Image 1: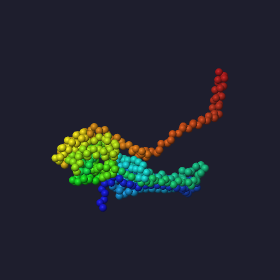
Image 2: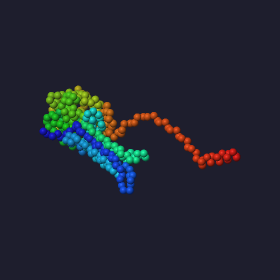
Image 3: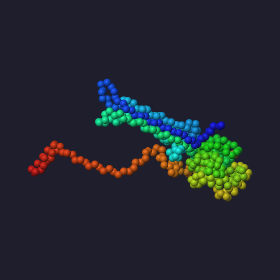
Length: 391
């Protein structure tokens, strides 16, 4: 069986370390008969983090190593010595990875930019030693507390590629050839459908040293929003794109009319995500080097009212017009806004603290007790009273 080369959804088991136990010990040294309690605290358990890395392109390493465990904290020791803290585990994932609880579906957070971190399993707190329980009336405490348990959960990680533009179209429309022409990507190109089996990212470099990331996803078919073909598995990779590039086969592959492909493609995108209807888009008419493409193009414009960018990815004719359109869009488009959590998410955003404390009424201030005058103050007061009577 051929091993997978690209994984964008995986279930992992993360377990943070338990906190170390506090200990109950007493100081015992020569000539010190009452040394008192000196039991130290336990160390905290290690935590598990997800960290975005631009060097990672897939969740494949987690597919083979689905169990990620952090170290436990060490127990406290005598002489008020603390136990060692457990080492944290940092799992590197591609930028654009989302994390959910695999059992409840609760959204936990996402990592977008390189270096972003998300805490997915918090380590347990260390227990307290008996040195914390000493009081004036309890000078030899034997109490100590155990360490807290670390988080233990199963996570569903989903990768949504981060790109500026996404190439969308039916199979064999020429998307892979186009991304190979305009970027440094080298996807597989062959004259049969479903050549692209996983998304491909290419970087377009312009003359003014600006860049644009373009994603090529596998071809869509009718019913892709319901899971038909490969579209449902990879449509989520264009959710983060700010520009949709609809690639239409203007030669009428398999007897389909290009205008019908355009309307069907629009319908599939809107059924999958209503936001796609309002997202900026470009329409590319590919395979214009074939003889039947000219007649199809005129009828396409008449039926759709859209003037596409005509080109031939095979010969390279018209690629410059597509690059000019992408560069113009990049200059005029606003910078991307930070992503918001999905609707209905109840989990706090990464980095958020504990739940806010409930508002309570202000406690009434205690009455200030008057200070009892001292003898010196009484003598001063008597002298002032005598001086006032003599005057």
